[in-house]
Amino acid sequence: MIEFTLDLKIVSANATGHWIKRYNLNKKNAAIIKKYWLTLKPKPKAPCTVTLERIYSPSFNQKKFDAHDNLRTSFKGVVDIIADLLVPGLPPGKADDEVHGITWEYLQTKGPEPRVRIKIEERP
Image (tube, rainbow, N blue to C red; front, side):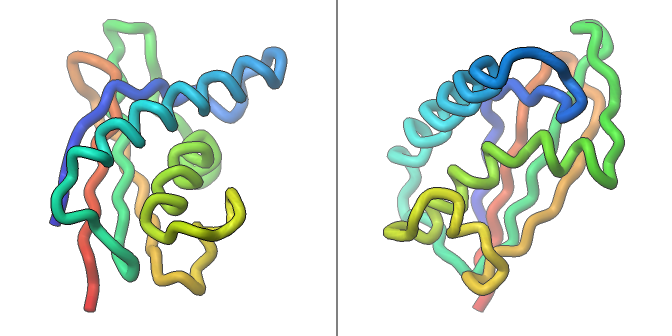
């Protein structure tokens, strides 16, 4: 099992604004994840269970997301990059398909600072 916490920004799927802002945020989050991924030894592989935990902070004026849709949708960029790292060589956005053996779980908790905790548990 591998568990790490990164300084990623997760924005509500209900947020309004120009699409380029979300695109740039996803690129920034992807760069942070890839940089950390290079330090992992050994690298995790599919099949596995990936738990994504949004740590939100009321002191940063953050609120809990709706868990059944908003939370999952808000993590879409993070899901895509982690899946691409777990199952390399596929077209972008295709590695998170269930056929590759990755199960996704989503949590959110209060914390002192906004962060994202990522836990990857390999399965036989």
